[in-house]
Image (tube, one colour):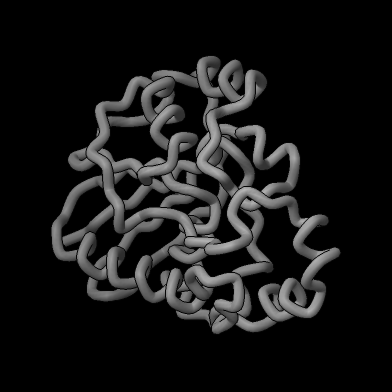
Length: 190
């Protein structure tokens, strides 16, 4: 029995343009235009899910998806850094930013460590694999990175070595506890 998981990264929001730890803001005007241009380009799925962030929900709506909210697919909780720019945090807490980028167990911002994020998403993948069919989920890029780390069974420090562009699809196909990974296909109207 094969499970196929398609993880769609959302269109860009203002937080990404400002290099800001997401404050759950809306899509940017450019992001809205881009997602509207590719609406209808995704195949049908047995289960359609969406991360609870505004940007993921707005992307799913603009793509024409009727998706169930999946809190278990939320992006990494950034605690006290939420809403601040990377430059702002790096200026005030340079050692903490360095630790965050190098230590997957760092949670000094008061939120979730990258290892906990990877464990949470790994648990979700394990549960998703119990049911055959296609799963489509609009999720934050950090969730896509965590899924790739888990699917490939690589150390959590590899998280930062994975780039996830807006409006790309990362595909996982799994059977027997093993996943194959297809990275970063751009959405386009065919």
